[in-house]
Image: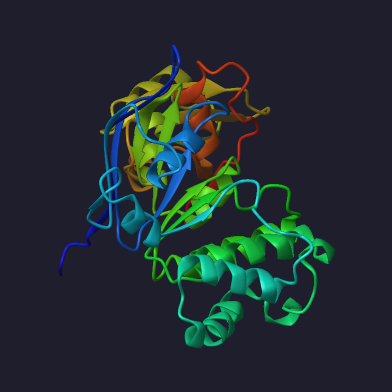
Length: 335
């Protein structure tokens, strides 16, 4: 299988605003067909980085290559390959949707003969065909976001850069836009910046996290969770006067891949243990075999995965008050 092409390459990228360093020597690649979640607390440098990639800002130092073009030497070629949706969707509310999309295609140099077919094709994907004749100011925020996405891809770019595309939407609209981004990601390279971390888990193939202008993590969401926090398992055993709890903990701790074992508060007649792995390996089979070999009366065994929210908070906690709260741990029952 042919390796996918690198569509965006950032090498030792930095940006200074006077004495303040907004982006500090970060490097990462994005490959074709990849949906990259670009995360960080407010003020971490996400929007500045995206503005540099899209040629809205020039870096203080470092190099950016987009679709094989140097961003500083060939900025027009870079812009032709990018569709950009800023957080504040740039819409003219007194225009109809059709007028606005035709205006966007005029700016993008789309040939006149291709415009209506392009609107029809893209509008079917983004769901704006039914509102082409309506003024943008009359639309709901969800439909305005759809119009913004449509203008970002109306020239059929290879790369989409979306800054908070679901900001301010209701839950139903978030689901719709998330599905739309996944659909677009089948054919295009996507960078998605968002504070809604479950959205990243559901949508993105890979995650880059920056904090205080520095890159602090790069990898698949599930790998970051496993590497930073491991998986936590809960065993509920019946206390029948058999093996002492300390001996149970010692045998669990001796299993390969176990980082720590502790006893949790348990109900009368039961002993409850928490086991944390040291990586992404699933320990349920090993734990179950240990229970069987020692003839412990097992009442329950479950795996509790750490959430991306927890990992995000751990990696960015130096940004006071910026980390999101509220675990979204998933629980998988052992078969």
